[in-house]
Length: 447
Image 1 (cartoon, one colour):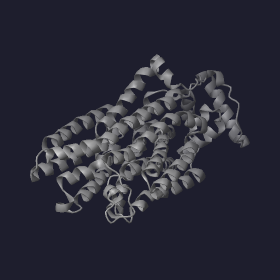
Image 2 (tube, rainbow, N blue to C red):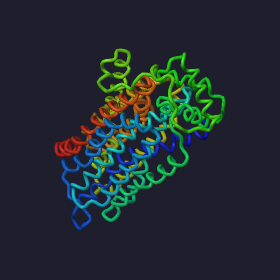
Image 3 (cartoon, one colour):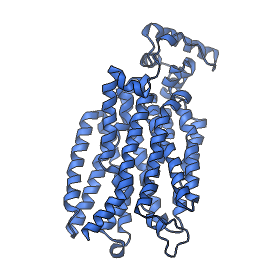
Image 4 (cartoon, helix red, strand yellow):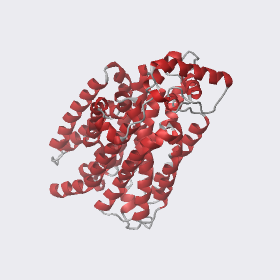
Protein backbone atom coordinates (compact mmCIF):
# COMPACT_ATOMS: atom_id res chain seq x y z
CA UNK A 1 0.00 0.00 0.00
CA UNK A 2 1.41 3.37 -1.05
CA UNK A 3 0.90 5.89 1.76
CA UNK A 4 0.90 9.63 1.18
CA UNK A 5 4.22 9.94 3.04
CA UNK A 6 5.84 7.31 0.83
CA UNK A 7 4.61 9.01 -2.35
CA UNK A 8 5.70 12.43 -1.09
CA UNK A 9 9.22 11.22 -0.29
CA UNK A 10 9.59 9.46 -3.63
CA UNK A 11 8.30 12.43 -5.61
CA UNK A 12 10.60 14.81 -3.70
CA UNK A 13 13.57 12.61 -4.53
CA UNK A 14 12.38 12.31 -8.13
CA UNK A 15 13.24 15.92 -8.86
CA UNK A 16 16.66 14.36 -9.55
CA UNK A 17 15.09 12.28 -12.32
CA UNK A 18 13.35 15.43 -13.59
CA UNK A 19 16.75 17.15 -13.77
CA UNK A 20 18.14 14.25 -15.80
CA UNK A 21 15.26 14.41 -18.25
CA UNK A 22 15.23 18.20 -18.48
CA UNK A 23 18.97 18.50 -19.08
CA UNK A 24 18.87 15.66 -21.61
CA UNK A 25 16.07 17.26 -23.65
CA UNK A 26 16.84 20.96 -23.24
CA UNK A 27 19.50 20.87 -25.99
CA UNK A 28 17.08 19.50 -28.59
CA UNK A 29 15.40 22.67 -29.83
CA UNK A 30 17.57 25.77 -29.26
CA UNK A 31 20.60 24.80 -31.36
CA UNK A 32 19.89 27.28 -34.16
CA UNK A 33 19.15 30.10 -31.71
CA UNK A 34 22.45 29.44 -29.90
CA UNK A 35 24.80 28.81 -32.83
CA UNK A 36 23.46 31.05 -35.62
CA UNK A 37 25.36 34.32 -35.23
CA UNK A 38 23.73 36.12 -38.15
CA UNK A 39 22.07 39.21 -36.61
CA UNK A 40 22.55 37.56 -33.19
CA UNK A 41 25.04 38.94 -30.69
CA UNK A 42 23.77 36.52 -28.02
CA UNK A 43 25.21 33.50 -29.81
CA UNK A 44 27.97 30.93 -29.29
CA UNK A 45 29.22 29.78 -32.72
CA UNK A 46 29.56 25.98 -32.81
CA UNK A 47 29.97 23.57 -35.73
CA UNK A 48 28.58 20.01 -35.78
CA UNK A 49 31.50 18.51 -33.87
CA UNK A 50 31.56 21.31 -31.30
CA UNK A 51 27.81 21.00 -30.74
CA UNK A 52 28.25 17.27 -30.34
CA UNK A 53 30.98 17.93 -27.78
CA UNK A 54 28.67 20.28 -25.87
CA UNK A 55 25.80 17.80 -25.81
CA UNK A 56 27.98 14.82 -24.94
CA UNK A 57 30.03 16.62 -22.26
CA UNK A 58 26.92 16.27 -20.10
CA UNK A 59 27.38 12.53 -20.41
CA UNK A 60 31.08 12.55 -19.54
CA UNK A 61 30.09 14.36 -16.37
CA UNK A 62 27.44 11.70 -15.84
CA UNK A 63 30.02 8.91 -16.02
CA UNK A 64 32.18 10.68 -13.42
CA UNK A 65 29.17 11.31 -11.18
CA UNK A 66 27.98 7.72 -11.42
CA UNK A 67 31.40 6.31 -10.53
CA UNK A 68 31.67 8.35 -7.32
CA UNK A 69 28.00 8.07 -6.35
CA UNK A 70 28.17 4.60 -4.85
CA UNK A 71 30.78 5.44 -2.23
CA UNK A 72 29.16 8.82 -1.50
CA UNK A 73 25.67 7.44 -0.92
CA UNK A 74 27.08 4.62 1.22
CA UNK A 75 28.80 7.23 3.39
CA UNK A 76 26.28 10.09 3.53
CA UNK A 77 22.97 8.28 2.98
CA UNK A 78 20.40 8.40 0.18
CA UNK A 79 18.42 11.46 1.30
CA UNK A 80 21.43 13.60 2.20
CA UNK A 81 23.22 12.72 -1.04
CA UNK A 82 20.17 13.74 -3.10
CA UNK A 83 20.09 16.99 -1.14
CA UNK A 84 23.81 17.80 -1.45
CA UNK A 85 23.73 16.90 -5.13
CA UNK A 86 21.74 20.06 -5.90
CA UNK A 87 25.02 22.00 -5.63
CA UNK A 88 26.08 20.47 -8.97
CA UNK A 89 22.74 21.25 -10.60
CA UNK A 90 22.83 24.87 -9.44
CA UNK A 91 26.45 25.64 -10.36
CA UNK A 92 26.23 23.91 -13.74
CA UNK A 93 22.96 25.62 -14.68
CA UNK A 94 24.35 29.06 -13.81
CA UNK A 95 27.51 28.42 -15.83
CA UNK A 96 25.60 27.30 -18.94
CA UNK A 97 23.04 30.11 -18.90
CA UNK A 98 25.72 32.78 -18.45
CA UNK A 99 28.43 31.35 -20.76
CA UNK A 100 29.88 33.51 -23.54
CA UNK A 101 32.21 30.95 -25.12
CA UNK A 102 32.41 27.25 -25.77
CA UNK A 103 34.62 26.57 -22.75
CA UNK A 104 32.20 27.91 -20.13
CA UNK A 105 29.35 26.31 -22.06
CA UNK A 106 30.91 22.86 -21.97
CA UNK A 107 32.22 23.13 -18.41
CA UNK A 108 28.75 23.99 -17.11
CA UNK A 109 27.34 21.03 -19.00
CA UNK A 110 29.92 18.72 -17.40
CA UNK A 111 29.04 19.97 -13.90
CA UNK A 112 25.32 19.41 -14.49
CA UNK A 113 26.20 15.97 -15.84
CA UNK A 114 28.04 15.07 -12.63
CA UNK A 115 24.91 15.93 -10.65
CA UNK A 116 22.69 13.90 -12.95
CA UNK A 117 25.12 10.96 -12.82
CA UNK A 118 24.99 10.93 -9.03
CA UNK A 119 21.20 11.31 -9.06
CA UNK A 120 20.65 8.38 -11.44
CA UNK A 121 22.55 6.10 -9.05
CA UNK A 122 21.12 7.31 -5.75
CA UNK A 123 17.45 7.83 -6.64
CA UNK A 124 16.61 4.23 -7.74
CA UNK A 125 18.23 2.94 -4.55
CA UNK A 126 16.29 5.45 -2.43
CA UNK A 127 12.99 4.50 -4.08
CA UNK A 128 13.63 0.75 -3.76
CA UNK A 129 14.60 1.01 -0.09
CA UNK A 130 11.57 3.12 0.79
CA UNK A 131 8.99 1.00 -1.06
CA UNK A 132 7.30 -2.20 0.11
CA UNK A 133 8.07 -5.16 -2.12
CA UNK A 134 4.49 -5.48 -3.41
CA UNK A 135 4.63 -2.13 -5.23
CA UNK A 136 8.37 -1.67 -5.69
CA UNK A 137 8.15 -1.98 -9.47
CA UNK A 138 5.41 0.63 -9.76
CA UNK A 139 7.25 3.02 -7.45
CA UNK A 140 10.49 2.40 -9.34
CA UNK A 141 8.74 3.36 -12.59
CA UNK A 142 8.20 6.84 -11.16
CA UNK A 143 11.91 7.39 -11.79
CA UNK A 144 11.46 6.95 -15.56
CA UNK A 145 8.16 8.85 -15.42
CA UNK A 146 9.88 11.90 -13.94
CA UNK A 147 12.65 11.61 -16.53
CA UNK A 148 10.12 11.86 -19.36
CA UNK A 149 8.29 14.66 -17.52
CA UNK A 150 11.62 16.49 -17.47
CA UNK A 151 12.12 15.92 -21.20
CA UNK A 152 8.53 17.00 -21.88
CA UNK A 153 8.97 20.18 -19.82
CA UNK A 154 12.14 21.10 -21.71
CA UNK A 155 10.32 20.67 -25.03
CA UNK A 156 7.23 22.55 -23.85
CA UNK A 157 9.26 25.56 -22.72
CA UNK A 158 11.60 25.18 -25.66
CA UNK A 159 8.80 25.79 -28.17
CA UNK A 160 8.53 29.37 -26.89
CA UNK A 161 12.06 29.97 -25.57
CA UNK A 162 14.24 28.54 -28.35
CA UNK A 163 15.00 32.03 -29.64
CA UNK A 164 18.12 34.17 -29.70
CA UNK A 165 16.65 36.35 -26.93
CA UNK A 166 15.34 33.59 -24.62
CA UNK A 167 17.60 30.54 -24.90
CA UNK A 168 19.58 31.43 -21.77
CA UNK A 169 16.35 31.50 -19.74
CA UNK A 170 15.52 28.05 -21.12
CA UNK A 171 18.68 26.61 -19.52
CA UNK A 172 18.24 28.73 -16.35
CA UNK A 173 14.86 27.08 -15.72
CA UNK A 174 16.88 24.18 -14.26
CA UNK A 175 17.23 26.22 -11.06
CA UNK A 176 13.50 25.85 -10.30
CA UNK A 177 13.60 22.12 -9.36
CA UNK A 178 16.77 22.79 -7.34
CA UNK A 179 14.85 25.11 -5.02
CA UNK A 180 11.89 22.73 -4.62
CA UNK A 181 13.97 19.63 -3.99
CA UNK A 182 16.20 21.33 -1.42
CA UNK A 183 13.20 22.54 0.58
CA UNK A 184 11.31 19.23 0.45
CA UNK A 185 14.25 16.94 1.20
CA UNK A 186 15.58 19.09 4.03
CA UNK A 187 12.33 19.74 5.89
CA UNK A 188 9.96 16.87 5.12
CA UNK A 189 11.68 13.70 3.87
CA UNK A 190 13.09 10.70 5.75
CA UNK A 191 16.25 8.71 5.26
CA UNK A 192 16.13 5.16 3.90
CA UNK A 193 15.35 2.72 6.74
CA UNK A 194 17.74 0.22 5.21
CA UNK A 195 20.67 2.66 5.05
CA UNK A 196 20.04 3.64 8.68
CA UNK A 197 20.02 -0.02 9.69
CA UNK A 198 23.23 -0.73 7.78
CA UNK A 199 24.84 2.12 9.73
CA UNK A 200 23.52 0.80 13.07
CA UNK A 201 21.00 3.62 13.58
CA UNK A 202 18.30 1.16 14.54
CA UNK A 203 16.00 3.57 16.38
CA UNK A 204 15.96 6.06 13.54
CA UNK A 205 15.58 3.24 11.04
CA UNK A 206 12.45 1.88 12.65
CA UNK A 207 10.95 5.33 13.18
CA UNK A 208 11.55 6.13 9.51
CA UNK A 209 9.74 2.95 8.51
CA UNK A 210 6.78 3.82 10.75
CA UNK A 211 6.45 7.24 9.15
CA UNK A 212 6.51 5.73 5.67
CA UNK A 213 3.93 3.02 6.48
CA UNK A 214 1.62 5.15 8.71
CA UNK A 215 1.59 2.41 11.33
CA UNK A 216 3.51 1.22 14.38
CA UNK A 217 3.08 -2.43 13.32
CA UNK A 218 6.29 -2.74 11.34
CA UNK A 219 8.19 -5.41 13.29
CA UNK A 220 7.90 -8.04 10.57
CA UNK A 221 9.04 -5.77 7.74
CA UNK A 222 11.77 -4.30 9.92
CA UNK A 223 13.13 -7.78 10.64
CA UNK A 224 13.22 -8.43 6.87
CA UNK A 225 15.20 -5.21 6.38
CA UNK A 226 17.73 -6.27 9.00
CA UNK A 227 18.05 -9.68 7.40
CA UNK A 228 18.56 -8.17 3.92
CA UNK A 229 21.36 -6.04 5.36
CA UNK A 230 23.31 -9.17 6.23
CA UNK A 231 22.35 -9.29 9.91
CA UNK A 232 21.89 -12.87 11.08
CA UNK A 233 18.48 -13.99 12.24
CA UNK A 234 19.87 -14.71 15.72
CA UNK A 235 20.75 -11.04 16.16
CA UNK A 236 17.71 -9.62 14.38
CA UNK A 237 15.46 -9.78 17.42
CA UNK A 238 18.13 -8.12 19.53
CA UNK A 239 18.42 -5.27 17.04
CA UNK A 240 14.66 -4.79 16.94
CA UNK A 241 14.67 -4.64 20.74
CA UNK A 242 17.39 -1.98 20.64
CA UNK A 243 15.28 0.02 18.20
CA UNK A 244 12.24 -0.20 20.46
CA UNK A 245 14.27 0.86 23.49
CA UNK A 246 15.73 3.75 21.51
CA UNK A 247 12.25 4.94 20.56
CA UNK A 248 11.08 4.77 24.15
CA UNK A 249 14.03 6.87 25.30
CA UNK A 250 13.56 9.24 22.33
CA UNK A 251 17.23 8.87 21.60
CA UNK A 252 18.70 10.01 18.31
CA UNK A 253 22.31 9.17 19.06
CA UNK A 254 24.35 6.66 17.11
CA UNK A 255 23.71 3.27 18.66
CA UNK A 256 26.30 0.51 18.92
CA UNK A 257 25.48 -2.52 16.85
CA UNK A 258 25.50 -5.93 18.50
CA UNK A 259 25.39 -7.43 15.03
CA UNK A 260 28.32 -5.66 13.45
CA UNK A 261 30.23 -8.89 13.04
CA UNK A 262 27.27 -10.47 11.28
CA UNK A 263 26.89 -7.68 8.73
CA UNK A 264 28.58 -7.94 5.38
CA UNK A 265 30.79 -5.09 4.24
CA UNK A 266 29.83 -3.23 1.07
CA UNK A 267 31.39 -4.79 -2.01
CA UNK A 268 33.83 -2.89 -4.21
CA UNK A 269 33.44 -2.68 -7.99
CA UNK A 270 36.14 -5.32 -8.47
CA UNK A 271 34.38 -7.68 -6.04
CA UNK A 272 31.24 -7.55 -8.20
CA UNK A 273 33.13 -9.67 -10.73
CA UNK A 274 34.89 -11.93 -8.23
CA UNK A 275 31.95 -12.80 -5.96
CA UNK A 276 30.22 -15.80 -7.61
CA UNK A 277 26.64 -15.33 -6.37
CA UNK A 278 26.71 -11.59 -7.23
CA UNK A 279 28.47 -11.74 -10.60
CA UNK A 280 25.64 -13.18 -12.75
CA UNK A 281 22.80 -10.93 -11.54
CA UNK A 282 25.12 -7.93 -11.78
CA UNK A 283 26.08 -8.75 -15.39
CA UNK A 284 22.39 -9.15 -16.22
CA UNK A 285 21.61 -5.71 -14.78
CA UNK A 286 24.62 -4.24 -16.60
CA UNK A 287 23.49 -5.70 -19.94
CA UNK A 288 20.07 -4.07 -19.54
CA UNK A 289 21.68 -0.66 -19.06
CA UNK A 290 23.82 -1.16 -22.18
CA UNK A 291 20.80 -2.29 -24.19
CA UNK A 292 18.80 0.73 -23.04
CA UNK A 293 21.32 3.24 -24.37
CA UNK A 294 22.46 1.43 -27.52
CA UNK A 295 18.82 1.01 -28.54
CA UNK A 296 19.12 4.53 -30.00
CA UNK A 297 16.54 6.20 -27.78
CA UNK A 298 18.72 9.22 -27.14
CA UNK A 299 18.86 9.97 -30.84
CA UNK A 300 15.21 10.89 -30.31
CA UNK A 301 15.87 12.67 -27.01
CA UNK A 302 18.76 14.84 -28.20
CA UNK A 303 18.27 15.21 -31.93
CA UNK A 304 14.63 14.57 -32.87
CA UNK A 305 14.24 18.19 -34.00
CA UNK A 306 17.26 17.80 -36.31
CA UNK A 307 15.85 14.52 -37.64
CA UNK A 308 12.39 16.00 -38.21
CA UNK A 309 13.87 19.04 -39.97
CA UNK A 310 15.39 16.72 -42.56
CA UNK A 311 11.90 15.55 -43.45
CA UNK A 312 10.16 18.88 -42.86
CA UNK A 313 12.62 21.76 -43.57
CA UNK A 314 11.89 25.00 -41.74
CA UNK A 315 11.90 27.05 -44.94
CA UNK A 316 9.04 24.97 -46.31
CA UNK A 317 7.17 23.77 -43.21
CA UNK A 318 7.88 26.48 -40.61
CA UNK A 319 8.15 25.23 -37.02
CA UNK A 320 6.56 21.85 -37.72
CA UNK A 321 9.72 20.03 -36.56
CA UNK A 322 9.53 21.77 -33.17
CA UNK A 323 5.88 20.80 -32.74
CA UNK A 324 6.61 17.20 -33.70
CA UNK A 325 9.39 17.11 -31.09
CA UNK A 326 6.97 18.44 -28.50
CA UNK A 327 4.41 15.77 -29.49
CA UNK A 328 7.10 13.10 -29.15
CA UNK A 329 7.85 14.21 -25.59
CA UNK A 330 4.14 14.39 -24.69
CA UNK A 331 3.63 10.86 -25.98
CA UNK A 332 6.55 9.69 -23.83
CA UNK A 333 4.66 10.90 -20.76
CA UNK A 334 1.34 9.32 -21.75
CA UNK A 335 2.73 5.82 -22.40
CA UNK A 336 4.19 5.64 -18.90
CA UNK A 337 0.72 5.20 -17.37
CA UNK A 338 0.01 1.71 -18.77
CA UNK A 339 3.56 0.83 -17.75
CA UNK A 340 2.69 1.53 -14.08
CA UNK A 341 -0.06 -1.09 -14.31
CA UNK A 342 1.65 -3.76 -16.39
CA UNK A 343 5.00 -3.78 -14.60
CA UNK A 344 3.45 -5.62 -11.64
CA UNK A 345 0.87 -7.60 -13.64
CA UNK A 346 3.10 -8.94 -16.43
CA UNK A 347 6.45 -8.95 -14.68
CA UNK A 348 9.78 -7.46 -15.69
CA UNK A 349 10.81 -10.09 -18.25
CA UNK A 350 7.57 -10.10 -20.27
CA UNK A 351 7.41 -6.32 -20.35
CA UNK A 352 11.05 -6.08 -21.46
CA UNK A 353 10.62 -8.60 -24.28
CA UNK A 354 7.47 -6.86 -25.50
CA UNK A 355 9.13 -3.46 -25.39
CA UNK A 356 12.31 -4.52 -27.21
CA UNK A 357 10.55 -6.53 -29.95
CA UNK A 358 8.14 -3.72 -30.84
CA UNK A 359 10.98 -1.18 -30.79
CA UNK A 360 12.74 -3.29 -33.42
CA UNK A 361 9.65 -3.16 -35.65
CA UNK A 362 9.38 0.61 -35.45
CA UNK A 363 13.13 1.02 -35.93
CA UNK A 364 12.90 -0.98 -39.14
CA UNK A 365 10.06 1.26 -40.27
CA UNK A 366 12.26 4.35 -39.77
CA UNK A 367 15.22 2.84 -41.63
CA UNK A 368 13.16 1.65 -44.60
CA UNK A 369 11.31 4.93 -45.08
CA UNK A 370 14.14 7.29 -44.10
CA UNK A 371 15.58 7.25 -47.62
CA UNK A 372 12.25 8.04 -49.32
CA UNK A 373 11.84 11.68 -50.34
CA UNK A 374 8.05 11.58 -50.43
CA UNK A 375 5.09 12.53 -48.27
CA UNK A 376 4.41 8.89 -47.41
CA UNK A 377 8.04 8.30 -46.51
CA UNK A 378 8.06 11.34 -44.20
CA UNK A 379 4.83 10.20 -42.56
CA UNK A 380 6.15 6.71 -41.79
CA UNK A 381 9.40 8.11 -40.40
CA UNK A 382 7.42 10.29 -37.97
CA UNK A 383 5.05 7.44 -37.13
CA UNK A 384 7.95 5.04 -36.59
CA UNK A 385 9.75 7.48 -34.29
CA UNK A 386 6.58 8.04 -32.25
CA UNK A 387 6.05 4.28 -31.95
CA UNK A 388 9.72 3.69 -31.07
CA UNK A 389 9.60 6.17 -28.18
CA UNK A 390 6.24 4.83 -26.98
CA UNK A 391 7.31 1.21 -26.75
CA UNK A 392 10.62 2.19 -25.14
CA UNK A 393 8.76 3.96 -22.33
CA UNK A 394 6.67 0.98 -21.25
CA UNK A 395 9.58 -1.40 -20.63
CA UNK A 396 13.17 -0.75 -21.62
CA UNK A 397 12.96 2.83 -20.37
CA UNK A 398 11.96 2.06 -16.79
CA UNK A 399 13.14 -1.43 -15.89
CA UNK A 400 16.96 -1.03 -16.05
CA UNK A 401 16.75 1.81 -13.51
CA UNK A 402 14.83 -0.22 -10.94
CA UNK A 403 16.32 -3.65 -11.51
CA UNK A 404 19.68 -3.30 -9.72
CA UNK A 405 18.31 -3.23 -6.13
CA UNK A 406 16.04 -6.15 -7.04
CA UNK A 407 18.77 -8.38 -8.46
CA UNK A 408 21.78 -7.81 -6.23
CA UNK A 409 22.03 -8.01 -2.41
CA UNK A 410 22.00 -4.78 -0.40
CA UNK A 411 25.74 -4.91 0.35
CA UNK A 412 26.44 -4.87 -3.42
CA UNK A 413 23.85 -2.25 -4.44
CA UNK A 414 26.07 0.83 -4.16
CA UNK A 415 28.92 -0.58 -6.25
CA UNK A 416 26.60 -2.28 -8.76
CA UNK A 417 24.48 0.83 -9.15
CA UNK A 418 27.56 3.00 -9.72
CA UNK A 419 29.08 0.80 -12.41
CA UNK A 420 25.79 0.07 -14.21
CA UNK A 421 24.91 3.74 -14.40
CA UNK A 422 28.47 4.74 -15.39
CA UNK A 423 28.33 2.28 -18.30
CA UNK A 424 24.84 3.56 -19.15
CA UNK A 425 26.17 7.13 -19.34
CA UNK A 426 29.24 5.99 -21.29
CA UNK A 427 27.09 4.39 -23.99
CA UNK A 428 24.90 7.49 -23.97
CA UNK A 429 28.03 9.59 -24.57
CA UNK A 430 28.99 7.61 -27.68
CA UNK A 431 25.56 8.17 -29.20
CA UNK A 432 25.43 11.89 -28.36
CA UNK A 433 28.96 12.70 -29.54
CA UNK A 434 28.96 10.99 -32.92
CA UNK A 435 25.32 11.33 -33.99
CA UNK A 436 25.33 15.01 -35.15
CA UNK A 437 28.10 14.29 -37.64
CA UNK A 438 26.33 11.11 -38.79
CA UNK A 439 23.08 13.01 -39.31
CA UNK A 440 24.90 15.70 -41.27
CA UNK A 441 26.64 13.03 -43.38
CA UNK A 442 23.34 11.28 -44.05
CA UNK A 443 21.74 14.57 -45.06
CA UNK A 444 24.58 15.27 -47.54
CA UNK A 445 24.24 11.79 -49.02
CA UNK A 446 20.51 12.26 -49.55
CA UNK A 447 21.15 15.48 -51.45
